[in-house]
Length: 211
Ligand code: HEC
Image (cartoon, rainbow, N blue to C red; front, side, top):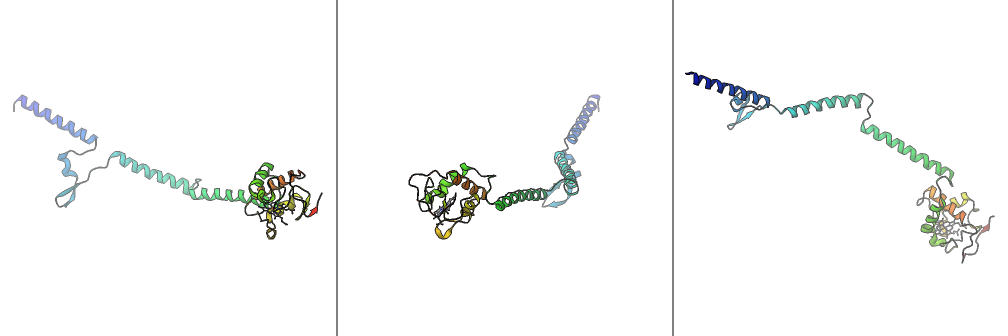
């Protein structure tokens, strides 16, 4: 071996080491090293290598494991609320709010609290005008602008009750299932507001006069 040759082979060896290092860094296996990682079984000549998994994949796996521990600790053994708990809680609040308002309304019957004349007027036009007339002058149903009443005595509670239970045998249906208490109350307010308006073609008074 002359000097030149030994220099050359030295350089080659260095190159090899360098390459090896690079290969290790990127955690891929260079071909000559495959024998170290080949698995000990043989499928018709096909060999399986035990390649290391990519770093990012392994790290993700560790992260999920850590997440699971933190999650379980917080939600199952500490102050966190499981989804089902939160759902139950919000349902209970919802049901409570619902029953609060409906029992309050049902127990008083007529209530001005959520009622409005405007709502009553538009409900009247869409639901009642066909029988009682656009101006409540009376058609099939009686005139609702006078002070004569066939049913009840014309007070808020009385009118509320007539609308609620109806007089089915006389053609006035019960509106209890079609309108909610505040809508019925709105209708009462509207009917009271048109009292004495004496519309044209008004049906003559029926029933008893209540002043
Ligand atoms: C299908 C026709 C019809 C509809 C629709 C109708 N009513 Fe009547 N209503 C009648 C009839 C008929 C009577 C009279 C019952 C009787 O002879 O006792 C009546 C009676 C009434 C009375 C009592 C009047 C009295 O002198 O005792 C009120 C109040 C009343 N209706 C309000 C309403 C309201 C409010 C609506 C709409 C939500 C409505 N009605 C929808 C037919 C109707």
